[in-house]
Amino acid sequence: MLFKKTAKWLLINTLSVIFIANSYAHSTKQTVAKVKPSVVGVGLYDALGTQTHKLQGTGFVFGDGSLVATNYHVIDQALDPQKVQYHIVFSGTGRKPNIHKVEIIATDREHDLAILKLNKSLVPLTLASERYVEDGTDVLLTGFPIGAILGLYPATHQGIVAATTPDVIPTAHSSQLSIQMLNRLEKKFMIYQLDITAYPGNSGSPLYDAHSGEVIGILNKVFVKESKESVLEKPSAISYAIPVRYLIDLAKREGLKVK
Image (cartoon, rainbow, N blue to C red; front, side, top):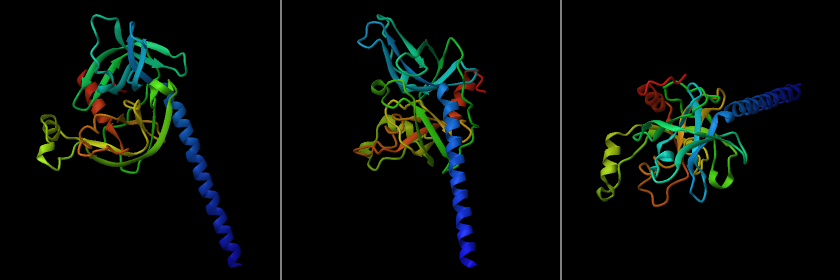
């Protein structure tokens, strides 16, 4: 009798675990499918370049559908007035994406953010609230890792928020200090440290809740490593994201509607 009860209990628990796992996988698939159309490539058009349409990073559509968020370092290359150059956004996927000319309408170098303006509307993502999410939150990341090589095929990575941590840490020796580092130490802010894989090209990708699809942060592959891991001879493979609250602040300062 005891054996039968134990076997029944094990069967029920096993089935429950399978049901939960399948439900989570189904939920994740739905979330990714909903987010992908709003993820765009961010690049540069150069009429005389060896590559006329250059993919430099990732971005995502938000607000009224005409706004694109990305990292400032993705679009900080100065345009040459002697050439036909302008910033562009790639939408769609594959070898024949749609290409849109964009204008930079807002930048925040301190938090490495930029907002671009499209001349049309695409499907926007919903931004989460300005509150920090809890450590352990299930998150997804969709963007164009090594985009210049792999092309415009959005890839999604899965993980959790590992910690909420300062963007910069004091150096061990005064010889490692610089004016830039001192300025960063005076203006340090909290960011997300992630247990997730990201690559060059993922900068500007939306980091979003795996269940709701709401954007909680903007992936950053350069900005944080230059400060937080500057003391390391070989930077780690840890990924970081700028909390969405700073994007919301930037949009509000420019009088832009985010929702």
